[in-house]
Image (cartoon, rainbow, N blue to C red; front, top):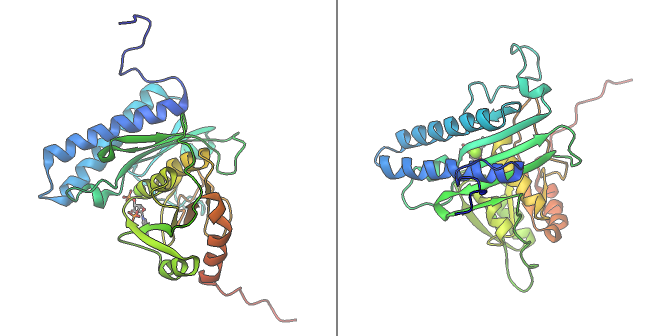
Length: 287
Ligand SMILES: Nc1ncnc2c1ncn2[C@@H]1O[C@H](COP(=O)(O)O)[C@@H](OP(=O)(O)O)[C@H]1O
Ligand SMILES: [Mg+2]
């Protein structure tokens, strides 16, 4: 053994490698929780998985990145909208320069169902001075039941351009957007129902599907890490109206997004615009 090598469990120094290391560790813990508890009580399994992964992520972030703030789905009050100023003191993350945005278990429903592999652990780093609009500078998606982790440290190559075959469009298997069938028809795509935002975006990154569309509700932790990896791979990621995804906002809701191969962005966004429910503009005062 090379004595200069760090022990296998040592946390990596670079943020990208650390994100992958951390997501992988939480993923292995989730596999153990699933194996130990089994699937006879899905609600208990979901609770145990969420809690175990959250505690591991929080503890390791406190140990190895103690100066940084954290936003985790499982934090008390994480869903709180702080824009109104009526909710008490605003969270530390809003003034921080570096914020880890984590989803300890994305695709909780699928985690609790036997034999499903579409669930994930998300670890992303948001940095105030980052040059991109989303400001995500590192991230990893662990897919423990698929035995793989995708990360920004070594982003996978972009899969070959779609040609001569039907486009595959992933959408939530349990909460697909109302308009997704029409949009798929319009761009000539076949719908692929799947759980977990991370698993769906990972499938776009690896080329198993060509696009993922979601609308109707989600939070920053559902997409931060997958979007970090997708954009590091050269894929398109935006809101469904084409505007930029923005993270570490006072209101953590980020209800819709599209992630796709770059050549599909224009036709998909055009079809999405046609199907967006238009909110009537407020009436202007007469005179
Ligand atoms: N309408 C909605 N409102 C809030 N969260 C939603 C949502 N639709 C999907 N999500 C969240 O997005 C993630 C992926 O969903 P889906 O599997 O349906 O594609 C899930 O995260 P969690 O499993 O972390 O809760 C799910 O809770
Ligand atoms: Mg989630």
